[in-house]
Image (cartoon, helix red, strand yellow):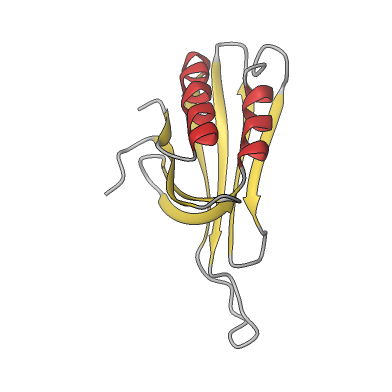
Length: 143
């Protein structure tokens, strides 16, 4: 079971070209899990931009996988007022549709409320995950 109010990215498989992430999110009411493939450079580029958020940027986004494909993940960070509180809109998809079954399935969008001081910790964990293609990164939400 997922812990309440957190976003977790965890490396679960790798080879010399890519690695697979299991991403789980829970905002205390809604939760979901998806698994997507990624490369280190893409994740490291996002981490560089996230270090500047929220002081240097109003919004920043990251995605991997294929939207309306087999698996997709996106997180959009944005400021909420001037109090140091931020929102993260998490979008997940898995097994969306195939040529044999057109029904859309397994889609989730939820908001996680965080404090901006938790972002540098998340950045360090994400950077370590991207460089080593191992381990996990957890962003804790406000309860």
